[in-house]
Image (cartoon, rainbow, N blue to C red; front, side, top):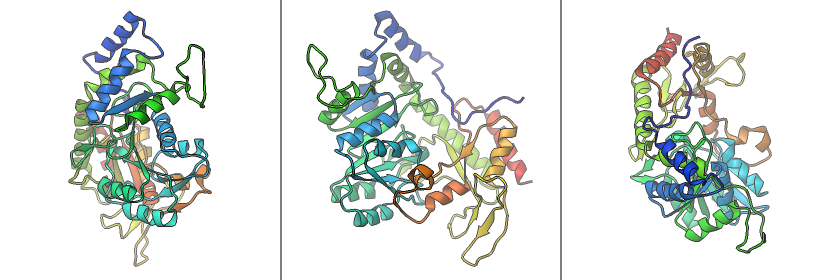
Length: 401
């Protein structure tokens, strides 16, 4: 069996920074629940992205949940949520018994379309919050989205789980809205094995989030609780890993961008291949390198592949109604890589297409669905060598003959 190439696996620092902080926690017996690593990780992460306050939590999902609570979202409230994302973005809306309305993406960013968002505001003027996502490390069009949310006086939450290290016009993602969230899951650009961070300019809101995250325990000698709380605080050991990983974050971003440029240079010439959009105002972390197959740059025609149905036959659709099967499908690519022990996966399946969310409203023109049907996430592991990258490219090129 050939060497396994992962999509995006944990990558500890060669210098051993993580172990230094972990050892310190062991030596001082600050294993759990909190300690110096947690306090410092919050400060160091917030300082890196250029925001005032952060709360270290067990996951990015927990961070979204507490952001919704801090925004006052409760039962029956409307929350606009980007449809093209992972389910962890949308699930916390249901935790609070609120009502998600899913918003489509645009081709220019692959993220929330400001024009569709504006349409949604007209349809649901009573909306309580908006969750925008920076997918695969690509920044959304934040100028227009921030402007719309301010005009309608609606809380903006940025799901920057995949975009730590990404900047929009020189400012880090996660710092434009009222709240930003980051994830340190095992496959993210830096990892704490599992963990997340909620950030905000509002000190009072972050302190409240920490309170909820520690079971809402009041400052009494005995255990006193006046609100429902959660066991959401990050442990001191996990935070130590995070502190060490922060020291190599810029290296990881540089490697992810190198991987993207390598794939683009080698594969962009193949007929029907296009890569995720890099705009001049966006410095992405390129967490995963993603490409589309059979989707023209003008988007006037596309090949429909149905990635979940291996037996289905794709067909090209254009305004003239012509049909053909001109390229290998995303499934062909993923299957070929899988046979060679190489991990890849489809673009996220949009939330409005998920059975669990099918009863909720969706506003858009199926851009997210098109990207899902035509997209592939290529292996983007920061431990990949040029030999690994060449191996992937040779397999993909081989499908084109």
